[in-house]
Length: 180
Image (tube, rainbow, N blue to C red):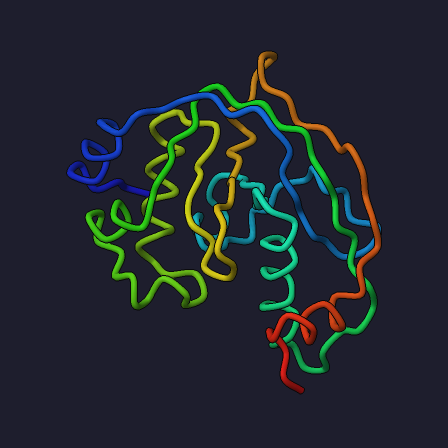
């Protein structure tokens, strides 16, 4: 993907730092929680760099899967696995809502599925050699951490600490995310 030189320059000026902590990822049962996606998403176009979507809060990870799975027909009802992951990154860029607007992502459109502008931003951040991106969740009042796993080296860490089964439909209804 060709990158907008202005976007690259603006992102390159933003500080990059390490991140060490626990994050959360909700997946279907029996899916390895450490396998990144190449099927595209909010922060990466389909078939570009592999990316692992996680949340800094348990509820953020559940809200993401509730949003996507509740749109499926028929809606799945099997429980999900909620994983707690230990992560260490070395070069992570953090964006706040004001940064998103300044980078050309209209905040009114941020909740849409896979906005092209966030995909361009994510691909540019990967191109700049970052191993992570922290950005506001579109589904829950928290931040998410996206990991560019192809950038991981010996000094990065990514491992599963714990996994639990969660009845996602019940959780989504209890939190007002599913009305039917």
